[in-house]
Amino acid sequence: LNDGAAALQASWALLALAGLASTLVIVALHARLRATDASWAGWATGVGLIGALLSTVHGVQEIAQNAKLADLWRDGDAATRAALTVSNSLPSTSNPRGLASFGFSGLFMLVAGALILRSADVLPRRLGYLALAGGALLLLLCAGSAFEIDLLVLIPGGLVSLIIGPLWWFWLG
Image 1 (tube, helix red, strand yellow):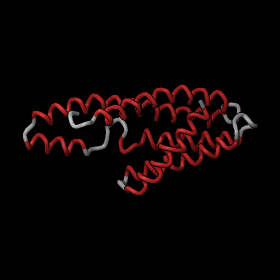
Image 2 (cartoon, rainbow, N blue to C red):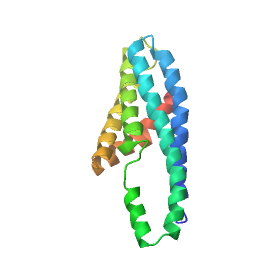
Image 3 (cartoon, helix red, strand yellow):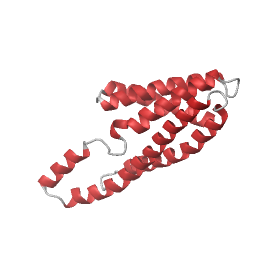
């Protein structure tokens, strides 16, 4: 934390806040799409809420854990630092390899996009196509994260994090 990790801690705080804030949009979207297909809208809402809430838990867990690990690193000997390096490379217990933040969110966006396209002008069709693209990119990102394939992390991650994701959430909001 002493080596400029304030930005890292801020990113975890943003993940936690974004996960919590997205629950409001997910529930509101369910209200708009349940007339199209109540079963699929309910399933997508459940998956979306689980992903959002686990992303929130992941962000809060990282904030708390990083502060504790920083103290151990600062006061630790070589063996302690080696153990911390190994433990820090393990997947998150609340969001292993991005399953919640990428996998569940991707499934939510795919189903929501399909429902938007099937709905009778409840929402713009372009929003549905945007959701399909975002969902596919999130699932690629999840696979890249799970199998540690940098190309599947960088390209889909960049597109969905910087362009498609913000457009989707702002348009829905």
